[in-house]
Amino acid sequence: MKDKENWEERLQKIEVLYQAMFDVSQQQRAFVEASGWEKKGMQCFQRWLEKRQRLMQAIEGLGIQEEEFLQDNPEGQSVWQTYREKCVCFITQIQNNDEVTRSGLEKATVSSSAKLASTRGNKKASKAYLQMGNQQPWFFDKKK
Image 1 (spheres, one colour):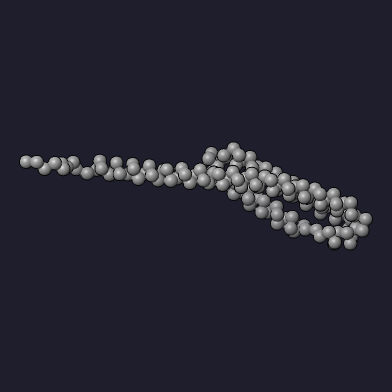
Image 2 (image 1 turned 90 degrees about the vertical axis):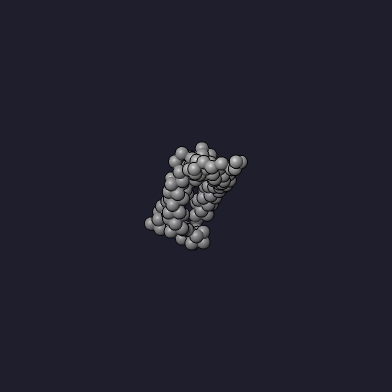
């Protein structure tokens, strides 16, 4: 009985971790869709990535193999199937959020690159005009 409770506790912990990882993926998606990096920078996005990494490591640490579970719980096929379906659902939703986030970040990168190129061009033009003002006037018409 104790082993069964231990398994159920581990399964619940993993579900909670997947839920937390899904929540983080939702935050990342909302951040990208709202163009949050323009206002807040990418520091919070980086923190979310670090949090997701910690959650993945925690899930791996609690990792449960089907054969091992069913060996200790021969009547637990339905429990395992329910657990597996929940995990697959979370993973699918996380992947969908990640795809939207990735696509949004790619668009932002292209946009930022274009803005940077434009800024560089404007800087060169501005520098050319400003340098001209620092020189002494000279006449190029040398008629006498």
